[in-house]
Image 1 (cartoon, each protein chain N blue to C red):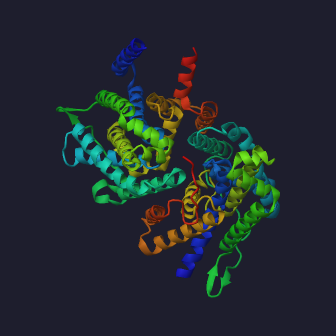
Image 2 (image 1 turned 90 degrees about the vertical axis):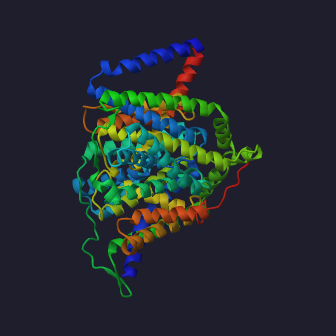
Length: 308
Length: 290
């Protein structure tokens, strides 16, 4: 098993390194976007898949991360990679402010409360015109990393590197104390309490971790598209993030990546037909995946490989 | 001034309440938060528009036919998409309804395109109605009246008919309801049908004051969920009052605090209420066994 896993890792690594040389500019853009979404989904999976909480404000965290990174890099002259980290930490603090009042809420109540926080955060970005440029958005020039302007390939490589670190972190967290605690909390908070696990503390931790992932991804996203405005970080995007996690597979790290690939790739393959055809097929696929594989694509894959 | 704002808020809240009731009927009986409710209503409204403009029916014939369409649509969707999902994780079912949402939106886009239409209103040129010194537009009166009729009819239906009783039994304990001879598939089909009907009515009522396009119900759906959560999702009256309160708050916040932050203020109030009452104002805590 470990040999096979190692071989998989080597092949993936080789493909990841070779990708920018095999693909055209648009292809690199798509792969980078997939990586960024995978990063968000990885973090969100902690909250949704492991802790069993729901969030509709991760697009706002993604947006706060994007704006914080852009402002630090453009206006304060902080080096890009450092500002990614600082923006991530800043958003983590913001997310704790969201998590504390949300602690008592469950299911749909939590969904609506987090949705409300998303609306408020988005509104703050929109109305703080002197800092963020309001609805006009921010135009971003490629940042310089180590004295050179960051190219598309550079950004791709940075995304892959961060995704690898994110995967490693997620793997460790999920198998360690935190992952186990979150799984019990999902099953029953009372049982967790009886075992001496503070549900509140771990839920806040799950919120914070997922917000950190989302914010770093947001910082990458800002410079991938080169232009950000508050409108793009709306509830629709939050719902898309949530769908990625569920389609890929709740509580499976690999599922987050599969979900992100599904979300970027499928609409891309359907482009060029009638305007509404992609939506129709994509929506129908979402329904079909959920009807035939309620545990997501990853869960289905696992079942098939185990049977074989 | 304040009376006008209140009436306007209640009228808007009545529309949210109709969608909210549609959502809650489905939610309580099938345990699925139906995010496709808005697009189902939008499709019903387009069907009504087609009956009015292309077939040329008068509104009093077109509306019942469109509502029938809403009912059948709900039942068909329940049978085709939702039935296989019984027993799946809740989130999977929610994502399936989101997929359905995209499908219905695309279907409407394919048939009617994404341009906006003006939906004719039979009350457009009627003189405003006077409640004491306060003028009320006939649209508002109709909205409020329709919401009241629906909440009363639904309450009576769930309390005093066999079918309603069966539905409430199914929502409390599926197993026991089954043993008592309640067909779960039939009750959930009825719930979805009623949801489609009530949501469709909300769509037809809201269309004249907005423009009819494929995004007709997006914002209203979210407001309906928010109002429902505010009132408490397991109480019909709670949802009704929550949605009305939401409409009024929105109007007052827009007028007195800041138009730009009206939505944000409304949500802050909702969050503040939920911090104190996590199950909504009228909601009751369901006991959960460990």
